[in-house]
Structures are given as C-alpha cells and as structure tokens.
View (cartoon, rainbow, N blue to C red):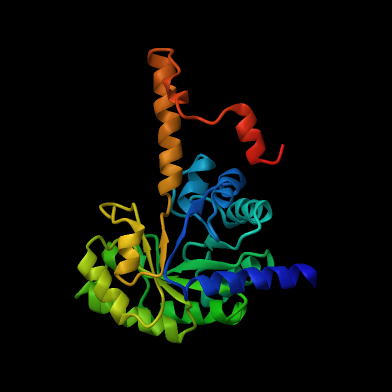
Length: 273
C-alpha cells in the first residue's frame, strides 16, 4: 500500500509539471545517468528507448525485447526519487488489449507515465486504430495515476495531406481518448511549433536536439510548449565521447579526453560513497 501511494504521488507530481510554465525532462538510459540527472536538479526524468538499446549493444527500433526494456527502466525507477516517464515505443503489442497490458505493467512497476507512439515499423497507424490503442492504455491506468503522453509521428512521413492538419486532428482525438499530453517529434521551425501549441487542446511535448531542431528550451516555452525532452540526445553525446576517447587512446595514446572529467572521489560522491 505504501508503494502504491508513493507511485501515485509521483504520477501526480509529473502531471502537475505539465500545468506550469514549461519544464525540461531529460532522457536517461541507465540507473547511473538517471542518478546524475536527478542530482543536477531535474524534477522528473524520462527514459530513451534508443539510448537503452544502444547501451545493450543493439540498434533502436524494437530490436530490444520488452522484458529487457522493462528491466532497464525498473532499474532507473529504483535509482531515483523523482517521477520517471518511460519510452514504451508503440506499446509493445499488435492489439489495443496488448497495449493496455503494457501500460498496466508499467504503472504497476512505479513508472509515473509513458510515451505511446502511433507508428510501428515505419508505418503510421490509422487514426481509429491509434485511438483504440490509447483508449486501452488509459483504461489500464486511470487519469491521475499515470501520465499518458501520446506521440504522433505525422512529421516523419506517411501522411497524404498536410501534416499540420493531420497532427491537430490526431491530437484532438488522442486527448478525447484520454491522453494527458501530446508529443510531436520531427518539427523544426518555430512558427509551426507555435501553431501546434495554439491548436492542440493539451500540453505539447517537443523533442529538442532531434535532426535540425536545436531550438533552446526557453524559446520553445515562449512558443507555448509545455514539455521539452531530448530523446536519445544525451546518450548520443555520452557514447560519442566514448568513441572520441577511444580513438584518441588508439591513435595517439594521449588522455586529453579526461579534461573536465570528474575525479574518482567526486564521482563516488555522486553515487553516495
């Protein structure tokens, strides 16, 4: 019972953030990165399916089985005291019932919320199918106990007409189905983002650092965005550093990559030693 109350309070705390002036939710890929981000002072943490997949040595895009993904996310939830929103891709199921079971599993593990995508294997679900999947997700975790962030991949292709109009239509239907927030990745220009924020009747999540979108968070908040995430951006930065360090070691044997790195004692303190 105590765990249930704690988990519910985390979900409510995450939901409240969406009603504020805007917040950044960074994406962790393991327990260590989550601990560091919590200590920096972020009020909530998201996971990145891409970063978790890369850390396991496989590519993003459903290459990692759901059980392994849930194991990694559970480690992140256990490592921090702030709410955690999980990247659950398309819900790990072909049917709405399977999506519902995925969300129920996530909520039961103390995950405060999740992204559910409306595309799988590069195919955008029809709007009715996507709505049914979200209805099942909402039924599995009622409003106030789990923050449902409905992601639409309309700006990644697969839309016959105007992606803006399709996005707004889907967003409105997803909100009616129970979504607390709408996530629209792939939008890179400020005017479109402003129009989306005005037209969508729910908090808008934009991912910064994806493709050509390098718009700073404070600018996004000024455009009406409520939630800014970075997807696999932090994981890409960390793994890129590993590659550069490895090349330096192999090619010159020098240790320039350690410039600015925390010392051993400082890193130990980050983890409670």
